[in-house]
Image (cartoon, rainbow, N blue to C red; front, side, top):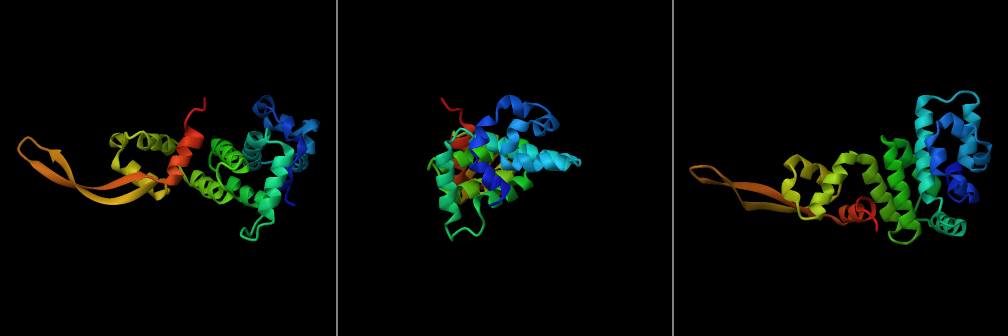
Length: 217
């Protein structure tokens, strides 16, 4: 099994703490207690011969992902990954697939969000295929655009610029309902009909708002 896959089901994930994540990565990798987590052990081995900036960022993203899932019981994590890995519908194992997604992330915060989505998948709130689709959307997006999605969710889409709507649509977060010709621009002398594309929030958009953007009680 790949090292991320082994790490996802490692009983030692509980050793990850917020305090450890906030220390410098070099100090983190030198922490012998954490080397029992397979992928951390791999990075620690690389660090001995020198680890570049890109690898440090990659390691940080992986750690942020793992931190989000650490409180899921070991048995539940293993049962879930075994189920997906044995499903012929998926060509790659869980760890391999997530590793490919994490590698493309341009923001460490995105790794945290994908970790949260993975927890929802393990807990059966969303299925694994939806987890993958939402993770790819997160990977492709500019994070600030996600906050604009909340305006749509709350019926305040008129506050958005047209370009914002098209960006969210291209990410799969809005659905195109067609052209509405009933909108008017008011000039001092006349009303000029203005044709405008009407959108509504998609199921993926709704899930991102409810699972990742809304504050949990």
